[in-house]
Structures are given as C-alpha cells and as structure tokens.
Amino acid sequence: MSAPCLIDHTGCGRALSDDWSGELTKVGWRARSATPVVAVAVLPGMPLFEIAVPLEVFATPRPGLVEPPYAVRLCAEDPSSDFGAFSLQVSHGFADLADADTVIVPALPAWDHPVPESLVVALQDARARGARVVGLCTGSFALAAAGILDGLTATTHWMYADELASRYPQVRVDRDVLYAGNAQVMTSAGTASGLDLCIELLRRDHGAAVANDVARRMVIAPHREGGQAQFVRAKPPSTTDRSLGPVLMWGLEHLDEGIGATELAAAHHISTRTLSRYFREQLGSSPTRWLVEQRVRRAQELLEQTSFTIAQIAPMAGFESTSTLRSHFVSVVGISPRDYRRLFNPGT
Image (tube, rainbow, N blue to C red; front, top):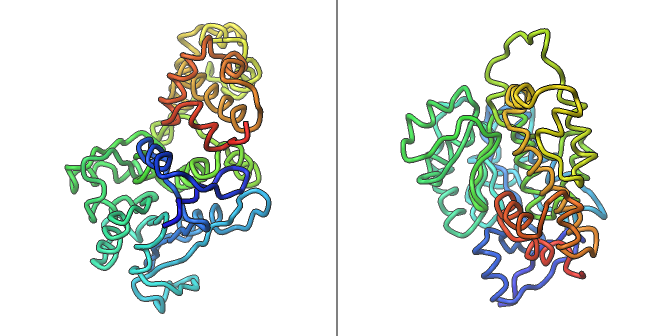
C-alpha cells in the first residue's frame, strides 16, 4: 500500500512515511485520501440551513485555494425520500457513509426524532473504519445513539443540552462551548455554530490561512470567541455597557507588544474588572484567554506563510519566549509549532 496523502495548505497532496503518519495520528492529524470525501447524512424534515452549512463549506468549488476539492455526497436511508418543502438530489444510501473521510450529521428534524437503526449502524461502521464523525446541533443525538460519544466531551444546542445529558449519561456534555470533541469526533452547538465547526474542520485539513480566507469570502468570523452562554438569555444592557469591537481591534493591532488585560483596559480608560465583565458578558471568555488564542492564530499564519524561525515568530505574535509559544500553541492547536509548520509549510 502506498503512503497516505496529507492535504496541505498549498493544495498539494504529500506522501508521508509510515513513521511520520503514525506520529500525526498520535497528535490527532489524520491522513486523508487524495480527494477527501465528506458524506452528509440527511433525513426528511431536517432544517435546510443545517444541511446547507457543510455543503457551503465543503462542496463550493474554491480553485486555487482548497486543492484538491472535497468530494461531497448526500446520503439518505432511502435516496428517493420526499424531503418536503425542498428537493435534494440524493444518490447515496447510509451504507455509503462508511468509506467517507468525514461523516456529518446535521440537526435532526427534532431533538427527540428517532434515529434510524440504519443510520446508527452506518455511523458505527464509519467510526470503526477511521472516519472523522461530526454532529451539528441536535445531530449530536445521532452520534450519542450510536455510542460514538461515550466517554467524550460533546455539546449540542443549549436548549437541549440537559436532554442529551439525561438520555446519554455516559457523555460529558459541555453546555457552554460552540463546539467540542477531539480530532476524530466533534459536535457543535446550535445553528450558526455548525459554521464555526465546519470552518474549524477546514482549518485542520488545510491550515489557518485557507480557513481564514474561506471565512472572509463567506463574510463570517474565522474564529468566534466564547461559548453559548453569551446567547442563552439576553438581558437589557446597562447604560455603562460598551461594545468590545474597538477593544478587540486595538488588541489585534498591538499583539506583538506583549499587552495583557491591564493594557487593554488602560487603552480604553476602563478598569480591568469592568473589562473582564465585558468579555464575560459579550464573549463568554476572559481578556487573557482571548489574547492567548489570538496570539496562537497569529503564530499559525506566520508559520504557514513565512520562513521566520519559531524564535522570531514568538515575539512577533506577542509571546515572551519560544517555550511560552510552544506551550500555548500545543494547548490550543494540539500539536507543536514545529510539527504544524511541517504540515502546512513543508518548504521552510
């Protein structure tokens, strides 16, 4: 058997040695076929938006950016099913999920909609064969029914998180995050969070630069901060509440200066306590966490697009040392800066 082919951000499939492929598997970066297959499981009555999300991200041709393109297939229990208010051209059955690289289950017609046994079996077969399995919104219930989420951290729409935890106590349900999981099994919160997760999958396959470019073309944030808590309930803002927009823009412009929460607050003439409250209420995060994540994103782009050494990149991204960069990078991305560059900028 030939060495597996990894899709890198240049659009070239690179053959990997068995040893290197094994190392990638350990850190959660999965080798893919020359043309990665994304299979979307559809049921009559599914919300159209949730079906459209993976199609928009993975099926839309993006020549020169996402190369080779994904092969996207829609799979149904009965391909001739009537999908109601809209028609879908479905040419694959659930059995065809098993040999896909990525299997996505969009939101179910209702959170308590019965999951067909044929879908359960197909999801189990796909996972057993090494597919990356993804549940968007209440699609998480389908993954849970198949036992794929057992022992893992997962999420779903905040309105149904308690139901997921109650029905499947072996699943660790995180009610706040926009998406959760590991390299091979991931779930997202409600509706728009499916976009966040699909962009994250694109980032893992092709790197931050490609994911950011696709997000810009779709006019969405490449990476949204915070979790579902910011959307659960709305309260009337007090007269002292302010938009964080200017604060975030200023922070991004000064990342390389080693700024922290104190500098963010001082630049906008507010106390650090008030700043922390704004971040908590508007992003569901903290200033320190937000700065770390933005610095890691900056480092990703520099690793992908430049030949600067890691020692040079650390201060450019605002890290005080290479060891600090490495520690935070591994925490956020899952692999070291050196391994990340080998994946997405192999020529340097």
